[in-house]
Image (cartoon, rainbow, N blue to C red):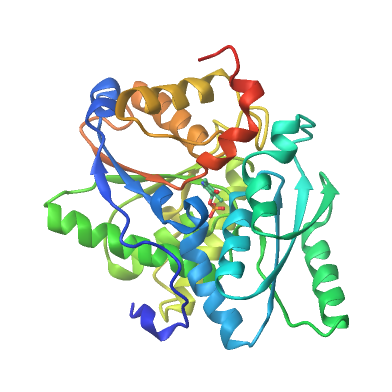
Length: 332
Ligand SMILES: *Cc1c(COP(=O)(O)O)cnc(C)c1O
């Protein structure tokens, strides 16, 4: 794969640990391990930090001075992007979409938003359903008109360059598993803007490591999610020089656990948050990993992972919990 071919700015604490979850394994009857990408370090960590290493590498190569990105109000991606900009002497302008419709003050001001403001980001908020790619373009044009040199990072940092971060994570997981003599039967991850899922699939395919990846959707329906991931996995493999390595059947998303919609939680998500916290002391988040764990628990209870060793990719997001205090009140 030779990732050193690509420009990269180091931001993350790597490798992140690959650890057993003994008490959660016992509770679910599955040999469950966790890849701790909640511990990537930057601004509290999370999966966007790996993508940002390659995205900032490209921004640096293009001599840009201002990062521009977008996300939901409680975006972990925006938090990590803002911190990456600060730490590299760049400006950052972000657009927050009021996607969930929540007006709760914790949601609109606490958690990730509080940290965005702490890092000094220039923040603009737009209503849910806004054309976010168009908002990014407009902001970049304004920066250019003022003499700045913007670098646009798409939502979630999910393009082929960003997905290289998860190609590297796939490599890391395989190396760690080999060192531990651990035969992995499946990797389970939340899948949203698709870069994480696509990067893992592309990395494993290019390495020839035959480990299936199950993405648990947090927003789009199955067909759309799988199409997005497949397209990006192919683009990522092409960037690595192996466009033909991705078979359609390598991309599997289960989108039955989205519930009411993106960023909206239900009782099963809260039960998943509580189970992870009260077995192995793991803090999941309400929007992504809590939903992925809700799916993993339900599938384990159906016997889907019988006899398997499963690695759960913890993609971070605990900072977002502080935006959901109201929803959790009375359930703990
Ligand atoms: C963004 C995010 C995801 C989803 O990753 P994608 O690459 O957007 O699919 C999962 N978990 C957390 C905590 C995130 O912030």
